[in-house]
Image 1 (spheres, rainbow, N blue to C red):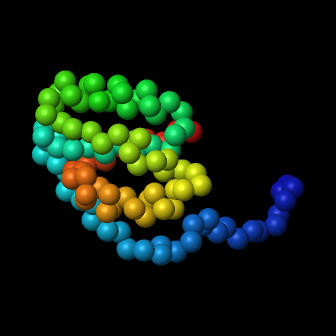
Image 2: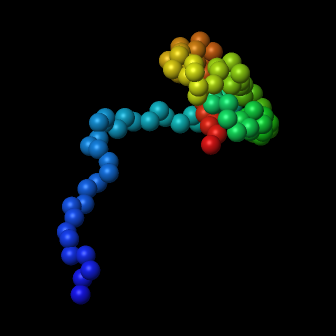
Length: 105
């Protein structure tokens, strides 16, 4: 005996795709001699994490350079719209080749 004999429609919770998938940028062959930007949302100890990443990456790629998260501002918060809008120009000006984006939970 069925307790609940009602039939319900099932729907997919996602909306239809709004954008086409764009190809990703090609990967760098190496980080040797490259400039890497650090982006952070100022949450959960990113300052410590970036210090460890820098140390490890400099051991592996001695001529790597970093642009600190301090030079960009928080990617989350009151100024995030402007900071994110300015990123392409700022990265081009600073000669950034790659980005490490850290976010806390």
